[in-house]
Image (tube, rainbow, N blue to C red; front, side, top):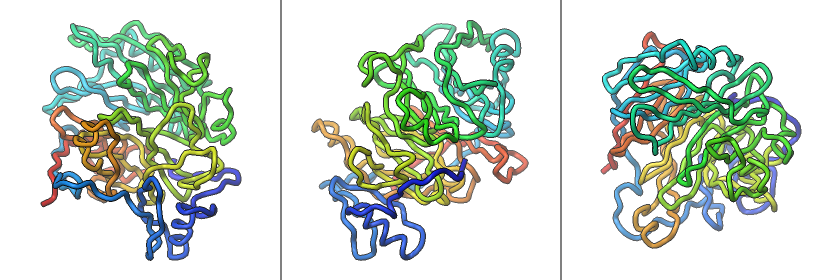
Length: 408
């Protein structure tokens, strides 16, 4: 949800310190501009937050990019997430229909066989507000005629993660099994994103379910990023060996991804001031509901980039070799955060710095829900104008193919 009233909390505009001072200065002149935090952020004369210095070299991707867009498919009813299948196809979840469809590179949209596992999935999904059939991930290590699929659904009592097998030829879903349940649900803030990490474990974004106390409660699965095995058990190496919790203090994470250096990123909805891009560390606390945006407060981890909620409300996230991309709903744009000198940094055993955020596709396609990085550097983007908050065109919603090139 773009905004919702919650209990008292501190934001970057209410906390002293260098980052807080920078945003305080911005608050005196209106909404804060997008910011990128350096290891030691400083306020400039205009009140903006300094970005880290650009690396030496002439990497054209360190600057702005241009985007060319092609519509791949259209008239998708409330699509929410997508995962790649062989042959350039995508498996797409349809939130309110509680169903799945396969979209081909030619734009054909084929629903899964409605019998068997697909019917079971629909029967136990209870779409309501922002809830329904949400995240999907497909095991990239699978070969042969079937693929292991993970799904996140909102039910009558909770949110849950399920595993199933997808027959690629018949498009039949079978062996549907619940592997993790008891995730708090509500009509908003359900989280829902799923991603298989480079370590082979499944990462689950769980929202606070509109109850801010969930985010700081170590016994609650709400307001967390969870890390589990394909069988739903807490993954080896979790901060608490008996818990699936990987990080806490989240409001509503809906984007997960990793760069080539192994850093994990997450996009997060703010309440009414600042949305966030965070680098996720195991056991770290990201501050909600005490902090929204950068606060510089001991015990909480600040975001690396942030935006006014009117300009972002970021849902899906994708990481390419040159940038982090965030699909924004209320902001109706695709945010690009460059990874400065990515290849040279990784080769030197370092993590890339961050460049100035850039808005792409602003106002061109409406609300953007999900983004996926293709094999050749292209992006695939799902619009979300039929989700009840947009102004859908006749051909909404759409799957877009975005080709990026360095500007100049």
